[in-house]
Image (cartoon, rainbow, N blue to C red; front, top):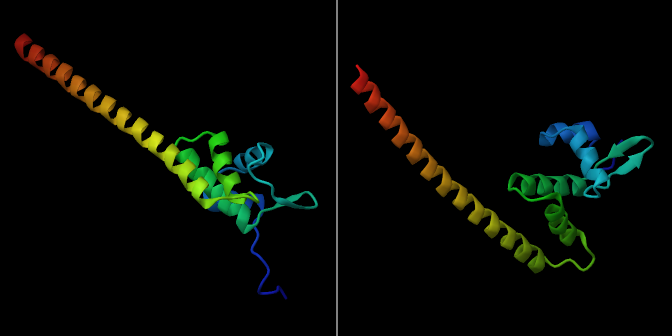
Length: 131
């Protein structure tokens, strides 16, 4: 019988499947020092803490953060001298940078779409003249 207080754990395959990544990704993050699962013989055993770290890392990656930036954020969360204020301030600054970059890209896309539409219009007009 399993004690009710026993923490849920995942194997590398279970965690990878649950979060939609490959087992290779998990092993890479482990090699980079972002995750440190327990070992049971040859098997990796991931805890709820590991799962939470991985979710933060994956979110950071989706936002365009580097692994080093992800590490900085998740390590602040884990540190003995962790400061939620410092973590939030650091994350917010990075998110502001990401937002500014996305706005610039959005503006570039609008300009490019307008130019594509203009050239397409010129092509259509020229085709009409050739008829």
